[in-house]
Length: 411
Image (cartoon, one colour):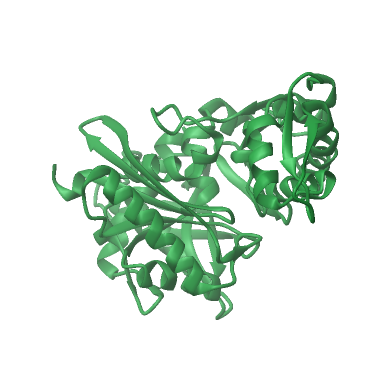
């Protein structure tokens, strides 16, 4: 198998660093390897210790390489956080062909025109996404290729991030011995496998309940309308358990994974477990019901904050498709039922349909694999030097290919 047939994603999370290897064979895509390591250098989704983050990346990469028996030279790297912003933009060009037929080149030029905006020096463009095209005043066009016209416009938005945050991520990846194939906005990648076309068109909130933060992204009319970060996540549930049961966080995490239930009324009083007590050599026994009385209030708080965030974004009454959740803590039994009660809306949990990664915590990593496979991007499309993202001028076609495929997916 040639190297270009492997697609590797790197998901750097607050609690875990995951490397996922996908194998592209024709129209088929398989997940053939997964490497993971505890994440030691992040807090609330932001890098606070580069050396520890580099060590975690190396450990995850080594795990994945040993599983598959190949060397990983580069990876698609997910990016998200409070520093991500969306900026509306507009581009206008004249159709260049003599017969006035709109070609790929015209669409490429108008998208590049939309990228030309004045940004503060601390901001950097991650991606550009078209909302709609306008041909000679006719609006609502998602793919204008082949149409006849004189004037082509695009309403788009730029996805930008903090230059410092982006460079820190790239620096960590490079110091771990990898090249950055491309940066991928995590909610956009996750939507590839978490959302259906109907959900994206009707209106849906995609919610990633991570360990350190919860990200809320609203999709409507086929495009990402807004994204926001809540500085609370699954680690808070673990801390509550540790405090409530007076045990250490390692034991609390194990208890959460093995015996948790998100709703008190669904918990069992007959399922018991023992945990070591802080400051003592003795163990104490508790029931799943006891554990649920600790977990449910925190989960209710998270879901309540998600609802408030959607209200701030102005979409509280415009989500016919409801909420789609992912993230490790959402695998907790009864989490979806509790979310439905709190949000008073349709709720489902997204799970990748690939063998070996059927867990809500793998949505971001697998989403990046699917994103790269669909768009046909390869590591040579971008160049990162000294921790700075410098897209070659010849990469315009690569950027355009991504936009074309996004349009095709959202139509």
